[in-house]
Image 1 (cartoon, rainbow, N blue to C red):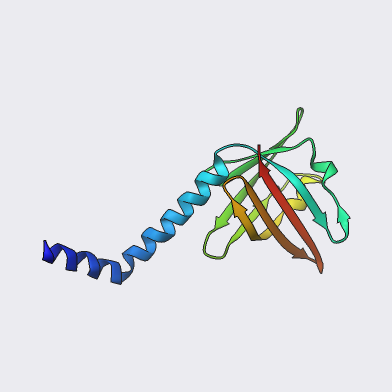
Image 2 (image 1 turned 180 degrees about the vertical axis):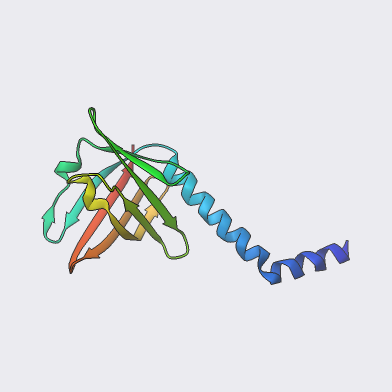
Length: 135
């Protein structure tokens, strides 16, 4: 029993525990993002509110790194990547028009819970703030 304990400690010190913790963080993010649909509660670009153009959209994130923005008549397809260590989410909708293409960025997560994410990015000197909520 004692030998097993020391083997576990040695493995942990060799970096396996750090990997397990990182994997657990990533699974937590994936579960939070992919269980349910999201909508843009608020989108601020500089001094301008661009929330209203996002009103018809809901977003579904998938575990394989894909994301779709839906309206009643359209679907914009893209990709997303979450980095729990850096607290960032990047998204890319290569064929989307406004407003969805405004989500194409590396977003720094400033606050989050299981049912919301607040993030910000700066592009060409203009700060944008995004507030997503789960439906």
